[in-house]
Amino acid sequence: MMDGTTGIRTPWQTPPAPGEAVEVAQGVLWLRLPLPMKLDHVNVYALDDGDGWTLVDSGMNTRRTRETWEALLSGPLGGKPVRRVVATHHHPDHIGLAGWFQREKGAELLTTRTAWLFARMLTLDEQDRPPPETLAFWRRAGMAEDMLNERANERPFNFADIVWPMPLGFGRLTEGGTIRMGGRTWDIRCGGGHAPEHATFWSRDDGLVLTGDQVILSISSNIGVYATEPEADPVADWLASCERLSTYARPDQLALGGHKLPFTGLPMRLRQLIDNHHSALERLERHLDTPRTAAECFAPLFRREIGPQEYGLALVEAVAHLNHLHQTARAVRRLNESGAWEFSRVG
Ligand SMILES: [Zn+2]
Image (cartoon, rainbow, N blue to C red; front, side, top):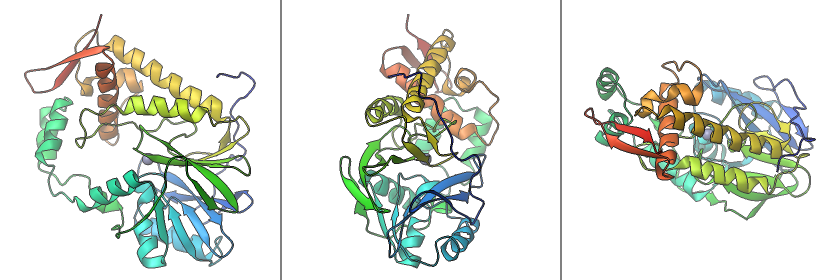
């Protein structure tokens, strides 16, 4: 429900500097780690369990992040041990150093089963060249021939490049379960669309919500389709998750997300996320008056120039939105002479 009286507020305008912490509630520290990307940071949280810490997310495995962690551990975390790492989802900026904390710091990893399986599978699946399935996926998405040829002969992005090897063993978090951390009991609620079985944590004792990348202020989480499941419809998962999480959301809760600033106004933010995707789908549908491949659909979806750094994310997001229109019978598709899916609107 839209409630005009409950806007979005950001109690802190300045994020913690590298190696420093901001206490957002008693026993809950907000930390920031660097990312070597356009989105240049990830938020992680340290929850005080008395005799040690539980970390929610861990950052990407780079030397710079590990150095930042060492400064945090001996600085704001006061030398107390990290006993548990909770990973909200399987992406490298969140789970990237879980294995390092397990192996080097004696911590336990807690996450959902899907997140753990995905992270471990992708980390072990090291590729020197893109496999034929990835090349076929790019071709079907309408990647230009010269880019396709260039990429076919390059080492692709590998999870193992930025995720510390993941040892065997984890503790499973499940939808509807609870976890005790930072002196609070948290309900575990899973979402999807950005990553399958993405965990969020809702405090029963006060208004804190650890949202990971499921709900972020001011940017929309990437929703992508990959060669692992080319016919997936993550936009449907995302919309359903936003609707379902809305039933737990209150205007006063403090949302602690994986990127950007903490905020209050979760019901409105979830409504915005739903509305933004519906608008994007409508713009895309109109764009399909002329048959288009995914690579030809950046303009209506992003409404800005997509640089080479963002091309990969933009392509998987375009496929996701086209798959959604196709699978909800708002678009049809045919393979063109270059082997790419061309989508046209229905009616
Ligand atoms: Zn993510």
